[in-house]
Length: 204
Image (cartoon, rainbow, N blue to C red; front, top):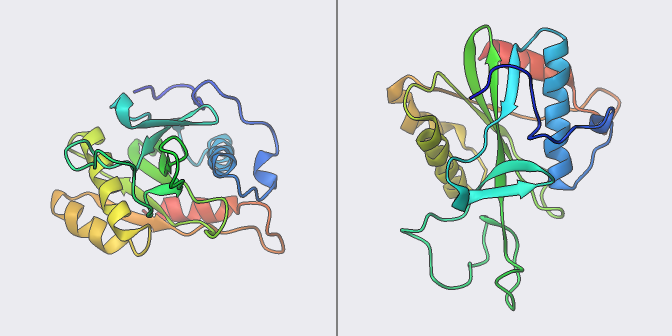
């Protein structure tokens, strides 16, 4: 994995993108990356990069960003059309192609020579205001298997109250789990509060 120059999977994020509270999920992903870019400029984080899924079968591209699918793994997946549920952001009872799996953007951050993995969960365009973002620190075992296991736990929780079960599974391995609640700047519902990100990352 590169720890050098930051990239957004070769897809530039326009200036001021984080200024608008856009409900389109992939735009939200890029807004998060814009915040990390600002934190890097401020010297809060050393570097960051999008971590693509290690298994191409479970990779989803959202607006040029390589994301991890919440699709069930092959050994437990039904041979038929996906059932309506949390794992899908769109369901079409008449079309397999119309069923779209939810995904997560995983970002690798380096802060004071410490590696963190930020998991940003995709939300539906309607009916969901967003989810807290789990952050994994001190991952000592395989990164790919750890992220995959975390996504399964998140799916089982349907993105709600994730920290206790994540900590229960990963705590014995001395992996620290924290969940970030998104905050917008005071007096505005359109711009992420960069200071809130800063405070959260410093206390991990």
